[in-house]
Image (tube, rainbow, N blue to C red):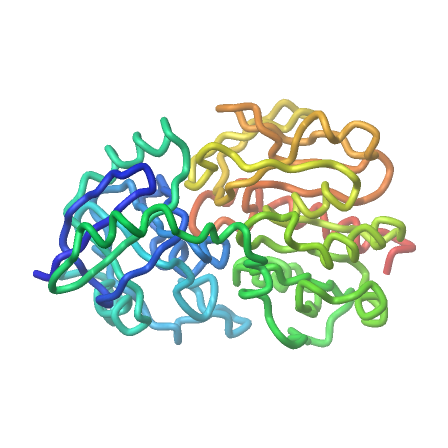
Length: 374
């Protein structure tokens, strides 16, 4: 078995066994508490630039399915983008002999093909407890036949913080993509690193979707004659998305219905004049309880974010807080007081996770199709 090491910026060094592709990578080390859905998580662009820890002890037991398994729109069912997005993967125990009817290859084989390194054989729950106490840290993951520990230690103080880059620029599409089924109305999806699940949920509600790069100007967006706008999820610090924020700021002056998801929620708040901040260790999992402040109903949600909207900064923006996290009372959704505009910090498209909040897509489409809007 090949050697592997995970070194954190606080000096913590964990030894394990390597899998996937032998190489050295660095990034922000984060954890996900979900029990299933590793193919969806690994391909979620919101994890771009990060080394992902899976707290659930056994990973890879149902293998990797084929991309040829698609929905009625030709979108892969078990992946959220066309490649693995994480920098590295950290698990407690890797399943070597998966069993599932759709299994085509092992997790180890898939990571190797895509040149992604992984480490197993460490206590991921103990590691997660450390991050919860100290906060998210930068780290180095190295998989190799031989490892120079002193060299790794000397590199810990020089790790680049990926959040200082415009990560969305690195995951957005380069050219417009149309999902044209000959339907009306038309939704423009601003791609900040969108998950396939968002596209699927929109198409299932019988609309056409035009997916545009994150830096599309207001003139280009309006030229498409949309009936509604969706701002997608994505990685990194939302304040780096300056062009997106400017476009959304101008879209707020129109009467178009707008829906922001995860990073899209933060961009919506920033465009309205609110503020965001980096969380201690973020929310990444499939069982985060969020309460609707208007109905007092609680929903279990799928989440993946390290930044959040500042509650106090929403004053004077025209937005109310809509949802709050039950665990830490952070903002999980905002809603405009007068216009059909809202954002949610969680993922109503789930995948993986509960589908309890999928009705928010219905709510958005109802606003889009309201008489006088189409």
